[in-house]
Image (tube, rainbow, N blue to C red; front, top):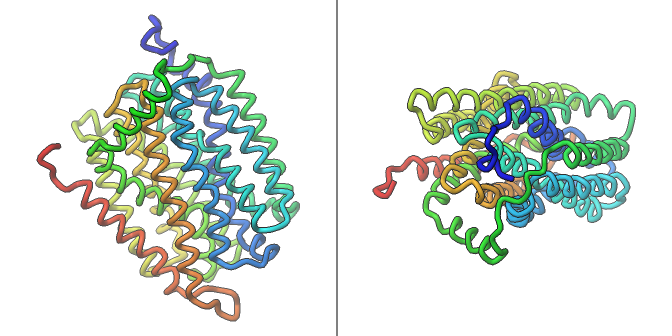
Length: 412
C-alpha cells in the first residue's frame, strides 16, 4: 500500500529505522565493493601480473552489469516494491563475492566482478524508491543525502581498514567476509522493511513504453550529460585511479596512499550528507536544486583541473575538497524524480542510473587504457603525463556538459 493511501503518515523515526537503515546496509556494501580495488590494486597486479589497462577493465566490470541491470531493476521496483527486489539482488552480490574470492584467472575474476555489480545494482534505486513512497516530495533531497552517507562510510572502510586487514589476511578472505555481510543485509531488508507492495499495476509493455517516453524527454537529456560526467569521473577516480595516482604522481607508498584515500572517503561521506542538507535548506530561500547542482559542479571542475595539472597531487586538502563536491551531481536524481509521478520514479531514476554507470564503465576502463599508452618507469610507476590525459579528457567533457545544462532554453 502506498503512503498516499495511508491515512496516518509514518513518523520520521519509523522511516529512518524500518526503511532507511536496512537499505543503508546494502548501499554501504555497494560502495565498499566498488571502491575496494583502489587499495588492493597492487595485490591484484602482483598476483595476476596485469597492467593498468587490465586493472581498469577488471574493476570497471562492476559498472557494466550494474548499468545494464538498471532498467529491469526499475521495472521490478515499480511492480514488486523495494524489499523483495533488493534482498534478492544482494544474494546475487554475495555469490559474486564468493566467486571473486575463489577465481584463479583474470577472466573469471572479471565475471565475478560483473556478478557483484549486478548484485548491487539496486542499492541506490531501491532506497530512492522507498523514499519516494514513504516521504513527501519536499523531503526527498535531504533523505537522499542522509542515505548516501552510508555509501561514503562504505568508501571509507574500503581505504585504511582494508589496507590494515591485508596485513593479517588475504584479499580473497576479505571477499568471503564481505559476501557473508551481504547475505545478512539481504535478510535484514527482507524481514525488517515493511512491504508496501508494488506501486504499478500496468503491464510490462506499458512500463516499457513509459521508459521510452522518459528517454525522449528533452529535460531528461538536458540533465543526463552533467550527471554522467560528474558522477562518472568522480567514481572512476575515487573507486580506483586515486590510489595509483597518489603512488605514481604523488610519490606515496601504499600505506600513505591509503591514508589519503581514507581522508577522501571521510570527505565523501560528509559531502553526501551536506549535499542533501544544504540543498534542502537553500530551497527554502528560493534557490533550486538545479542551481545548487550547477554551482557545486563548477567547483568540482576546479578540483579536476588541479589534479589534471598535477598541482600538489598528494595534498590532503585537495583530495578532501574533491571528496566533498565530487558527487554533488547526485542531486540529478531528486530533480529527475520530480519531473514524473511517484509511481514511475523507480524507472526514471533507474534509466538515469543506467546511463551514468554505463558511461562510468567506459570512463574508468578508458582511463586505464590511456594510462597504459605510456611505458612504466623502472620502479613500475606511470608518468604524470599519462594521468594528465586520463583525467583531462573527462574534465573537458564535464565542462561541455555543464555548459549544455545551464545554457538558456526557450522551452525551459
